[in-house]
Image (cartoon, rainbow, N blue to C red; front, side, top):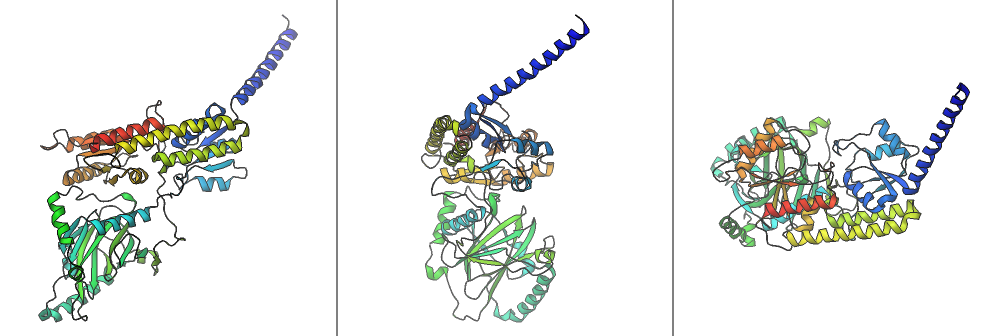
Length: 524
């Protein structure tokens, strides 16, 4: 074969190869109506289930990057621009989405999948906090403490942000020492100026569900000790509760004995006259102090009668946010249920099977609009998938506290991600400190978790799939005792914020694994 023939043959082979590539792409196009980029594993589950073979699905983020931490690369943005449609969850689960889409001149059709069943709303952390505060004020449990009359002695009355109502009694006044007390008050006023009051970020008057004349104040507090100052012209005894917003509550006293409950409830059933005892001389002024230990920085809500003037005073290791901000900041006082109030929503709605079903419908409608030729297939796939979600919901409902007898309904976990699951099935989730589900806890973090487990008698700890195995093993080993010869029991829950370790798992199978863990850990 001469050189000319070789060149011609090579050219023909290149041509045929090129044509074959075109034919292959044409076949692929016939099989897939389009390609979708998704932000997370659980969103991808929806699009894959409903799109079926007609939609090619690709994850935006690498499988090993937590959804909250991901930032798109230049290559990722190119992939996003070249996609036919982009699905993301929303509610700020993916912090990068809004700014990235706004920066693109040719952004693809973008669809937020978060949705709730008809008549139901997304859960915001503030509303959940207020509901918890009000529920505890009305139902307890209760603990009695006597406030001290001197700020310098506040540490002798230590309170915590926990699921217990503090029944506080003002110190008795000693009129013979009135002059001495005034001198002490002057000294304490100087201390106030030195350390500074922490201003509330928001004050809510008479929130729905609370006893009448209740005020809820929300503060941003950093880790450390704070002095709580209570003043009243009338009340000598009142109820107060403090909780951390977002579910990262300090965990105390969730396993009180029946005897304790009966005793405190008997105390609570005093007459209205006793509970709202007023002094005959309204000129008298009641003041008392206590100390609160804040274990983790965050927003904290304090609920108590409106007749109590309440101040949070930064300790020596605390922070005066007013000074840090460089000036006075007026507190935001609103009436309950102001429709214009902006909230910080819990994004984890997909962990409620009925909410996930509503989100499946969002995906169905978006795919039908984007790819009309696939309407029949999408509809059939969606009906089948929604039926599976109905079955999943029925299994959760029949096996968890709403419809079954469990020995406990309180779930101790290392991540505040289960508000929707809790509300749907009558559970209570409480987070412990020190065990990051997505990082490598330090020795100090592990020690903090072990201390909390031992102090509170926690026997079952629910953790997420990707929690450090070495940290979990260390916690189990350090909690071995006479009452727990094998250490704290560990059960796994699955949030699907990262792709599962087992490639064969999907949303349905992972939710069923979580259900089995809950049944085992709660004695259902």
